[in-house]
Image (cartoon, rainbow over all chains, first blue to last red; front, side, top):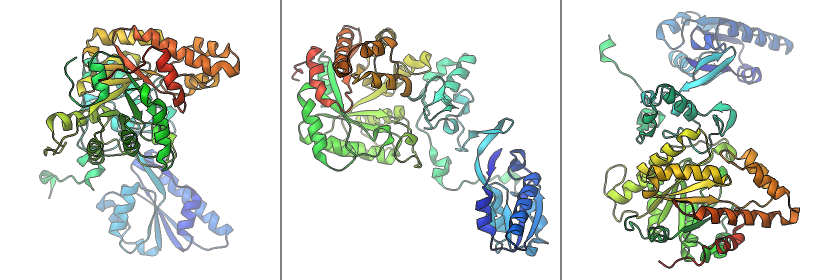
Amino acid sequence: MIIAEKKPIEEIIEEVKDFDRILVLGCNECVTVCEAGGKKEVEVLASALRMYFITQGKEKTIGERTLERQCDHEYLEEIRGNIDDYDAVISLACGVGVQFCAEKYLEMPLLPGVNTVCLGANEDRGLWTERCQACGTCVLARTGGICPVSRCAKRVLNGPCGGSTGGKCEISKDTDCAWQLIVDRLKALDKMDDYEKVAPIKDWSTDRAGGPRTVTREDVKI
Amino acid sequence: MSECRTESRLEKVMRAGHLGVTSECGPPRGSDPAEVREKGALIKDHVDAVNVTDNQTAMTRMSSLAACVHLKLEGIEPVLQMVTRDRNRVALQSDILGAASFDINNMLCLSGDHQSFGDCAQGQNVHDLDSMQLVQTARHMRDEGKFLGGADIKRPPKMFVGAAANPFADPFEIRIPRLAKKIACGAEFIQTQCIYNIDKFKEWMKRAVDRGLTEKAFIMAGMTPMKSVGMAKYMKNKVPGMDVPEEIIKRLAGVDKKAQAQEGIDICVEHIQQLKEVEGVAGFHIMAIEWEEKVPEIVERSGLYPRPEV
């Protein structure tokens, strides 16, 4: 899923302080699971904003709404009827949702309430970690199911680099060396012979290098 | 090994069966070429070639290529170090051609320290290629005379292509497979991480010999003299992938502080003398960090002087 984290309240206040009617708009998908932008976080942020503006002696209208998804026309249409009740929207969706909302409501100021961090997993209670960078050409079949693109700080496709120590990456003792994990997996799979296969120079045109990416499926088009 | 493929003096020395000797020169944090020339002059007569580091520890410095040119103009043979951290395949190929235009005949392919260690911790890294793929690229440009894009290169670069190896890094079981992989990619010489654990290095070397890797590439043992017991402890505890046995620290700590530097040189010379006898060792890469003036003494006392004429 997409992992996000809440922006500091001070940053959000700075962005919305000149608007009088503000809608805090949550999303019921990834950001709900990673506890950054679901219904619960909408309530918390809206309350915090109300309290702040009261202490400042300002009268503001802070609305709350959480959609099933913000990356889907169908659900974004649900707010068309009352979006004009607001001067600005703080979207707690990932960067995709914020933008999709902005595209749909052209004249409505749209402000992000979270920082979108990565594609990751809920590794433990309160711990979300990156697993994929959507490079567009998956190499996991060759790397024991561990991704060197997203999990190696140097994206080394033929690793590890010389900085791997005790299973950890040179950038931090808290970061696993992706290539240690790959070697461990290849050993468990009894496929260490695969380690010596040289990964070819990668086609990064399917990564961000190739510009904005699209997937077109004629078979599912209406 | 077979006949020379390039005009590299380093290649000629080692293919003729001599032990090769290289050292290292870190470019300055400024644009004054005098510092490069001075460092080069200190070691010129005692080595076959001089590695020029590429923004080592991710600190911004004079470019490796420019510093190589300054050395070349002084009659010193440079080894252009290239890291994959800062340049994509366009820039890497372009700089290989630029170096070849000055008849720089050696290059060493590395991934480079992560930028978070340096003075641009908030910068992007590139890693379009990795170090093995850079080796492949350099060999492709030389041997096929073609760009990665497929077009012919007018006057292809004639580089003697090297890579680094760390006999001590983790995970240990892939140390030899990883070396084999680099050599399969086309590395013709290997410069190792600094060696202090002689027994472990010998074990690594034996495995390399057993796999026939020393028939395919020249393995140069990396040597760095310790300046003090403090440096030894720092290397042991802080530098990733470094193996400094306790006996080295004890030996340095056992002499007066003023005598520690000389003790460090003595240890280095003794290690070279031991490793000269180890099957498969094709030369020495002496990295006297900001201590270049000691390289002549180390080379002479190790019986590696004078350097052969080739």
